[in-house]
Length: 428
Image (cartoon, rainbow, N blue to C red; front, side, top):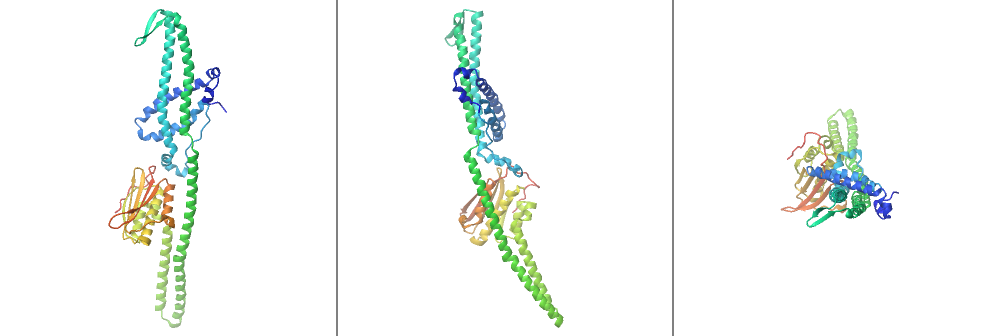
């Protein structure tokens, strides 16, 4: 393993001064000066893009610190799989590592200024020493005013002092370069490195999301089984009974020649078949409505309002969004409708949706005076987990007024979406 700049500084002076680290440190600081000036010019006209520039800075700084003997650092950012590339910007903006790299960007500006002052002062002193030595030989006896009343007589007798000052500046400068470069590199490594706590938190989030997904799939499977058992199965059994009656009526027709009972039995069986078909459609529609995939959130909620058990008032102004965000918003409204119909006795449910500052904001309220108990297995807990998996939030509160009710508000980042279709479809 190579020695770092801090290891080199602690070595004996002759080993440090005649090694490669002073030159590496000087090169590191010169690069910092140019690097800082470059970002200063870039950031002024592009302030809104600072998080993106910070990602570039973090990538380069994790490699640049190796000039000073530090080990390579892995990226602190999560890997974005190919299906989620369209959400890349949202994911990066929500990562703490991105905002630490913003701090690294600004620290580069500060250290670049310090390096400029240090290197500039050293160059000035060295140039003066060389110039004074030259003038002491060519123009002996000349007096040069340095500042105020401070002057320097250019005589050959003073030349050794200038040589000593020149060499001393080289030694002091070498150590100053190493210390300043090491301080900058250490800070950048702290800001741009992955954090074990964040990785552990990410693992815990993924584990919780996986458990939530498994639980949601089990609950959905049980719901489908219950709907099929209580709905379609019972109606199909009834249809079988009706067909048995038709069989008996057909035998009666053969015996008596009267067709009226048979026609009535056929009509009843047809009605039973239609009811079973409607039940099956409702069950399938509850899985994922086709209109949501084909025409988007606005059309799906308008279709939902037409068959809602409680009057649903819509105020929508959203374009086509990523499927995951649209699905989460749709299930939020359906859950609110279900709770209003079963528990609160609401007479009206209101749903609003719009995109604000790169976020899909969906608010659903009712006037039923009920409450939501997430610890009793309601679907709200699942909605909260769904929103969290998309980088969003779900809040539950109680409205006030003539009739209090439940207010559900979901916010999901959608700043990286690409519209598919013709934009928003306002609905009243």
